[in-house]
Length: 88
Image (cartoon, rainbow, N blue to C red; front, top):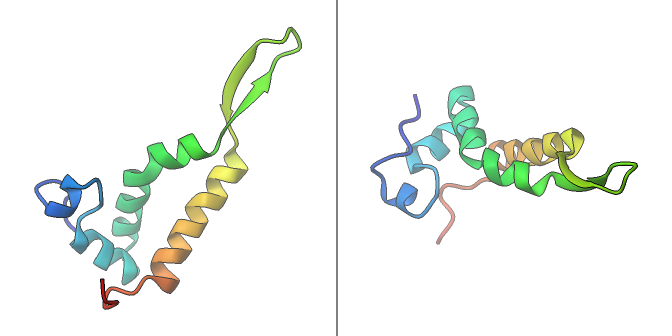
């Protein structure tokens, strides 16, 4: 398995652990799930939108289609384009 997000210098900066990312890049489904869980709060926030009830009351709802698109783009970016050997 990929590893934990705790006790790692990257997790101290709010990033998934390197070994988790490396496993996700290699296609490890559990690691991909870990990364998605790590970013779920941010993705949910980005896919939230204000809607108004007929009486004018504003509420926030999650746009499920947008959330799925963001998650799919993240998975695509990890599995298709992420380069672990790129110079920092």
